[in-house]
Length: 112
Image (cartoon, rainbow, N blue to C red):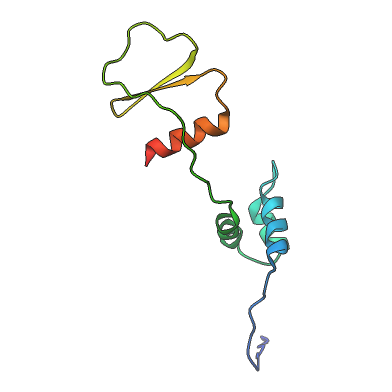
């Protein structure tokens, strides 16, 4: 014989505070963490954790840097340059002491 469960009344959605969301997202971002396991323990779907991670992400503030764009590639290396990127005909020279966050922001802005 089988069992039937009847739910009478309105089923409510759970409400998660931002702090609870941040804790679960942080746990899912730990090295070696399993998003599926964390979602299972919190009784939610893994896609919800991914959405919270996207929603709670800090917006990237645009930063500006001096960039030299040249249509002619230089045959000899430029002193002080550690990396030279050629993207869509533009040449980006990155100094060895450039902050990584600044380099990442500049490269991201070039992809747009």
